Length: 141
Image (cartoon, rainbow, N blue to C red; front, side, top):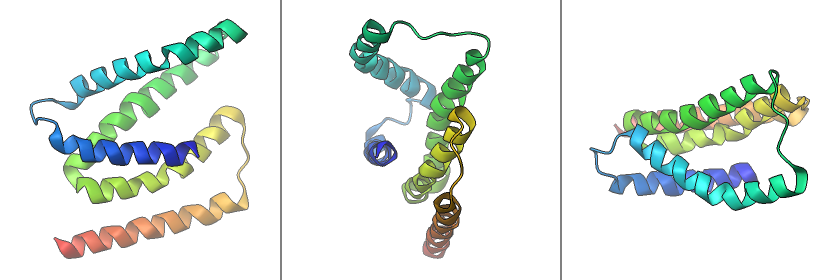
């Protein structure tokens, strides 16, 4: 459900990007959005810290925090903006169908989730759909 909600947010973001001036580059956009997200999350973080205390951060958790921040935070944002520029909104939005596959891979790597038959069935279906959309887009050019 979270992946579906995130997909809807990125669709709205893609539509909103049409109104952003070309002079506003992705890094300042990221800084503004990160600040807004941090402010929006403050009440939830405060509630969690009040109920459970600060999380334990040690030498084992620091690399994972770095991966989450750099790859899934900054990297995903910049990658999405680059894809919008190079591929347009149709192909970029279609690529969001890979979100569940990435979420499953991260769950396996980070929390030991096991791979199930439906993961193996879903990935080829998603890739086939992306290939179909890509072929359609190439035909329309």
